[in-house]
Image 1 (cartoon, one colour):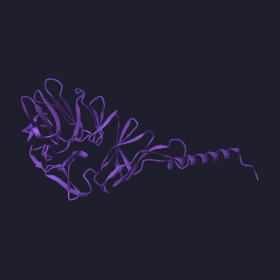
Image 2: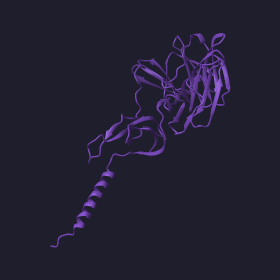
Image 3: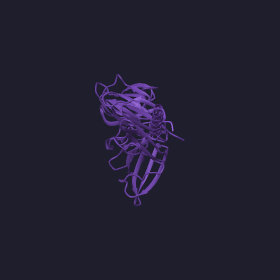
Image 4: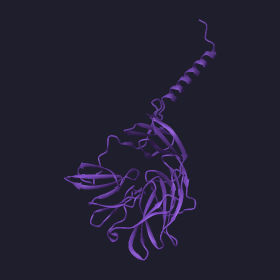
Length: 319
């Protein structure tokens, strides 16, 4: 038998190496169940209202739905909030307090000046109106003022039971409700419609703010917890669950949640740190895999927005 030429061994080795690399590439941990939509350079800050990543030192925000980046360059400091797709900044310093607003889609920018010597507090926000509470001046009573997206006052009413209400209820993350809620000292709740300025009174309940500004009133009833959730003053839904209202409401089987980021390894190379992996389960399932640490910023029915190192990426669920 004639010996094989030396070059055949080199070819065989090259083929084996190519197959190994190909199999390794095809079987490596990778993003699944998701399609990339957009990416943007991240800012160092916090997520406000579950909707925007806002820089810690500047009023720069990235909309976690559209990826639009907005900058309120002329505004520094102040109390910030997110409401109805707007970044809002209240500033009480100076001769007159001001409210600045900018649409997260980059389509609007305005400034409203409040009454002199008044303290302004966020109350609520709807598509065309932001509501603030103005207290002080020559009267001890407080007023509720609706400000339109053109920066002009839309309406103004005297706040009912002004001396007996607590602070307006807003989300801990600066999330403004779509219906204003002002608890009173006897437990009843004053509700305010941002669009019409209509005011109603509800029986004693605990008010809280959920995803995208939904307002929930929780009250104990018949050994369970009675929860009414408002998207507007005229649109609400009610559920009753067993147990105390202090407990978290039961998770829906249709909810989508992102689990704690971990590290995944290829089966053929179980060494090193692996790749950062974020699993998503519930109504939608998927997996995000990246080279840098992963952090879920927003999860909704349309997709998931994730920070990977210095980049923010939006993914849509594969249908």
